[in-house]
Length: 66
Image (cartoon, rainbow, N blue to C red):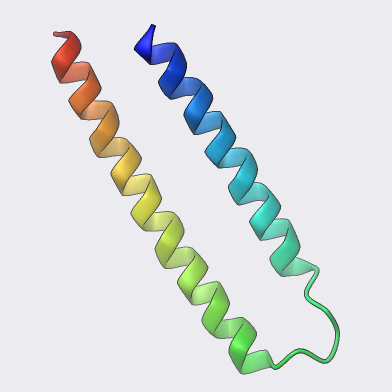
C-alpha cells in the first residue's frame, strides 16, 4: 500500500518538476540573463535535494516494511 502512495507521490513530483522546467525555458523576453542563470542554478540544487530526500525516504519505507 505505502509503495503505491510513494509511487504516486513521486509521479506528482516529477510532473511538477517537468512543469517548472518547461516554464523556465519559456522565460519572458528581456529578462535579466544573470537572474535567470541564478534561478537555473537554484532549481538544479533544489531538484538534487528533493531527489536525495526522496531516495532516503524510500530507504526508510523499505526498511520499515522489512
